[in-house]
Length: 274
Ligand code: MG
Ligand code: ZN
Picture 1 (tube, rainbow, N blue to C red):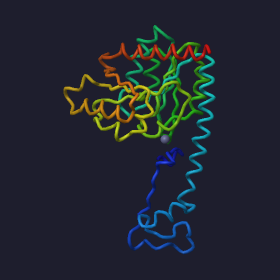
Picture 2 (tube, helix red, strand yellow):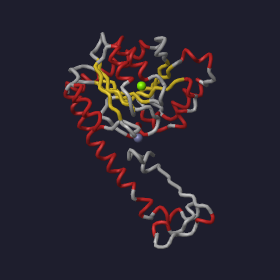
Picture 3 (cartoon, rainbow, N blue to C red):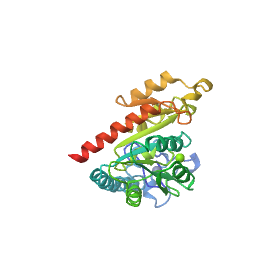
Picture 4 (cartoon, protein in one colour):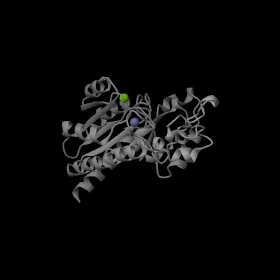
């Protein structure tokens, strides 16, 4: 979990304070730390105010986020705008995919982009050069986008009806999975240079995905990537997930990606019409 940005999976978080033998005695008047050796006094520690204090705070953060995400969802539905949340580790190819998607899909549906990075306008500049309207969110120390940031960016973008908004999340395979942005779909991009073990190492991210794009498949002959294992593990973590093999630099698999997007656009229009 990331303490600095206040996010966390309160159900799955484990914090174990390990003391040196010589420091293992409770400090005078420090009731919250009574016991000292965390591994032998786990239950006492679990109920100490110091250990549990962060949990309600995180629940509040996520509950507030969920409310704002719902408001974003209503806002998007009213306008029949499809929002796609793109998540990956840094360097998997989100921005390169978006550059190509903007150029190629832009002729079929209006596209705009919300860029998330800790610092710089580098990616926003690339997206604008590719021909799309773009708003950059710099999160500073934060390691994910949340619904409030995206709500502000959406109002700034003011996307036209029946268009697509891509939200490029901060490069991080962990906490972006926890934060609902009000998007229609979550797409996880993973590249073959990262190793086939990621679905099992980062199951929350792969479980949250509606679609997984396996990028840089043009590099498969040059890297040690077990494709069979990757597909099996992705399916084990998320039995309903669709996986498309693409190369955003070479253009491989783009037709299947665009077709998938067009099905989502049609779905968003149906929802809006109801
Ligand atoms: Mg990027
Ligand atoms: Zn975070």
